[in-house]
Image 1 (spheres, rainbow, N blue to C red):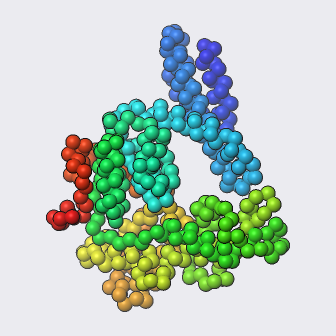
Image 2 (image 1 turned 90 degrees about the horizontal axis):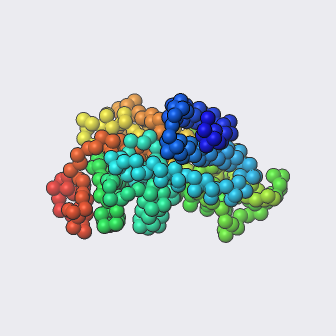
Image 3 (image 1 turned 90 degrees about the vertical axis):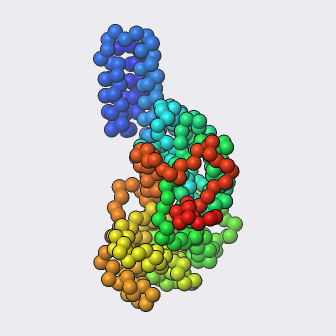
Length: 413
């Protein structure tokens, strides 16, 4: 065996112990590629070695990510130290992998889903987004991170599919067009249904509610047997991460100081614990189901949407409810939402016409995480290479963008 190939194989053997499934796959691929060919020229061996190095880096990245997630999930005190030492190196490995695969062709389209908290992007025909990043305060910063730092794609050779929110402002659409058509490439969008309702800031309201509840009812202790002291408003915590880790929905309405969850002690640093009452973990999500202002909760909005639909399609709509977005990933949110829908139809006269449809409510089971489902739809649209009438090309862009909802009904903006 060529010494170069043998050296790469040793590296693969080492990393393969931690990630055997991926190792076996790539090992067989390498064997088919060049190990059976005994009379390979030097150029072919060098090419094979480069491929082997790429495989090694990919396996190393997967191994590190697996180790990092396991330590974080188990609250291992060393995970923060591991993050500080190794995350920069892992980031360089990941970027090198993305760069290698971003120039393989121009048929795959870039798919971008702008979420309120996170932006998902990648290439069509792939089963998951390449990367999920926090949404920047400006679109320009988001696009710069996507195109120049992450996927490192050739903007002049690719089309871009934007997964558009139904109630996206015209000003934001124009900003997207300006960035894509004047700085990047073209974009395509898929028209959505007209019958829609929206709840603003549903996800961010959970984070804000949890913060206010913990400042009022949470305690900082050094021992679980202590009463503790109130939380300082200036205490620096990753509230978004904390919300995702501790919050869960309740199957029934939660009242203050009552709940089914146990109190939780979360370590802030080496000698300080954060005492979180169990009912607070559930109360933070109550705003999704009960609001002080009428018809500003999610169950009411769903029923409002169904009422807007023609009567002959309501049954079909009820049987195809899909949970998407990060908020829907909280435990028991789907169960609680279903119970609230039933309760509203039975107790509210406004929705009495929907009572006969209670048995029709069905929730689509998707193999993907809810947070990336809209992106998956954009990816499928890219694979299908749909001839979309809403396609906007650079040469036709005049600096203005219209609202597809107005165009659909022949109205003027």
